[in-house]
Amino acid sequence: MNLWYCFLGALVGTLIGVLPGLGPIATMAMLLPLTYYLEPTGALIMLAGIYYGAQYGGSTTAILMRLPGESSSVVTCLDGYEMARQGRAGTALATAALSSFLAGTITTLLIAFFSPALTAVAQRFGPAEYFCLMILGLTAAIVFAQGSLLKSFGMILVGLLFGLIGADVNTGLDRFTFGIAELRDGVGIAALSMGVFGIAEIVLNLARPEQGGERAQNVSSLRLSAADFRAAWPAALRGTGIGALLGILPGGSAMMASFASYSAEKKLSSSPERFGHGAIEGVAGPEAANNAGAQASFIPMLALGIPSNSVMAMMAGAMLIHGIAPSPNLASVQPGLFWGLIVSMWLGNVMLLIINLPLIGLWVRLLQVPYRLMFPAILLFCCIGIYSVNYSVFEVALLALFGVAGIIFALLNCPLAPLVLAFILGPAMEENLRRAMLISGGDLGIFTSPVCIAMLAAAAMILSMIIFPSFRNVRAVAVDG
Image (cartoon, rainbow, N blue to C red):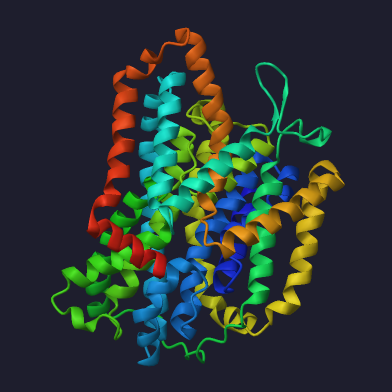
């Protein structure tokens, strides 16, 4: 069954990656209630497959039609579509698929080797260290988030406030429930994520004009020549390293990784004028980077219990639905889930390599279906899914309310990832802070341990990065892209 869920996630992820508009975050948010009826391992394997499958699928239409299915595939359009126009569409598609597979394989090995080591270190943390770790995570989420720093900080505060709703853990008193009995257990992650990502995305897509893209290019031979291979594999390795590094950082994203990789390849090239005119390195590097970034983002969640981006927050939400708290103890408490998820990543990459190239014609034909014909079914699926969690009409109303909030936030260009991250981490931050204060009798000296000081210093260092013009320029390019 887990193999089936892996295949299903990879297939759905590829489809979502191909279709512009409905990204992996919105899809995972809409499928979150469905995971309530699955085994925890199968649910996480399917959601993970959707995420890294979307990184594969986004490159197909970027290369064939100059229409990126995913934001992380924007860079692939630059050289991938030019290669297709030169009659080398098959070479570009094979390069994208093989680079993604190489990145996925290497990153899966990194997760397998480094996650248990990080877990062993994190298991020695006390409440004070956990609190400082979460401060570090939220600080990185603010700095590396797309858009205004001030708006990112505001979204963090909104997420923390949403996390406070419900009965107080220590006293049992209601907080911010306004006399509504259904809010005593707090706001559900499914309602929040489906509203701000799913419902808002559907409505905003309806407001956008239909994207036609360019005429699809014919697919040539999928073989790479010896010269192509010699040019592509070093770029793919460099892209894997860049993507893995940025993926591990809290707040890092596959899109930022693909931009950084493309910039690095252009600077390292002896003939940078080729870029934008069909350079194979401009396909291999970014495609490896976005897939490595997507999979490396699992390391902080699996090893430290800290979701590094909004997609990992969806994964953490699925765990919470099953009563599993994301924590460094995951490998020892749920070894089947931990190692099953890691093994499924490599198997999923093999499946994606097999199913992507033969189905290229089908993916291109699917783009001809108007979005206005798909959205009623998607909207109905959202409402049925959220109702099925607790069979509560109030949850459906909450879904609509968060949908409106998501639309307003999007129109104001407020990043949604910090909101969801703060919502997931907020209750755990409060619990660890209060526990640390109880242990120390209210003495703030408990936060002066070497680990606490190191993490708070790291948070301050990350925050100070924003003063450097070079970092602001890279951030602005990623946001504009």
